Every structure is written in structure tokens, then in C-alpha cells.
Image 1 (cartoon, helix red, strand yellow):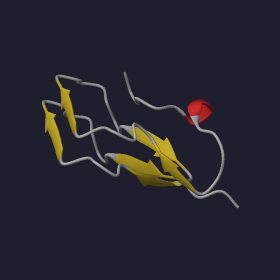
Image 2 (cartoon, rainbow, N blue to C red):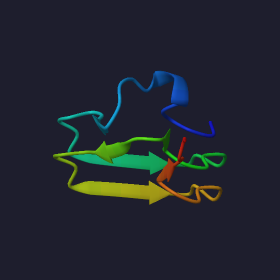
Image 3 (cartoon, one colour):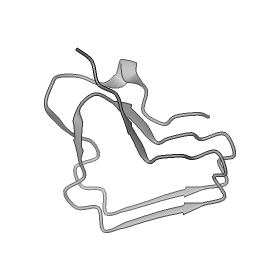
Image 4 (cartoon, rainbow, N blue to C red):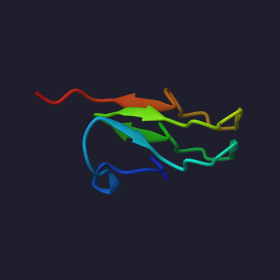
Length: 69
């Protein structure tokens, strides 16, 4: 797995609220994960209190924001 949320799964414009009630996210033992999310939108996790990342050696960024003109 190289990304969790793909560009095709995105909808709408502006700020995206994914998993609006998510309080904790743990990513573990994902050797090919480069980033969690690829987006051209701002991203919001209103209740996220804890993010834990273990053994994800290829991960460069949690969110890779792309710019489209």
C-alpha cells in the first residue's frame, strides 16, 4: 500500500473533513506507505488527538499536498 486515501476518492473543493469523529489513528508495519493522503485540498481532523506511526520506512509525509492550477 503506497497511499491510504487516493485522489479518486476525494470529492468537492476547499477543506475536506475525513473521518469527522476520529480520535486516534495508528499506522503500523506498512513498509511501502509513502503518505497517508494525497490531496489538493486542505485537510481537517477535528477530533484527532493522537497519531502514531510505527515501522513505515518509506513514509515521507503524512499528507502530500499537490497544487493544481
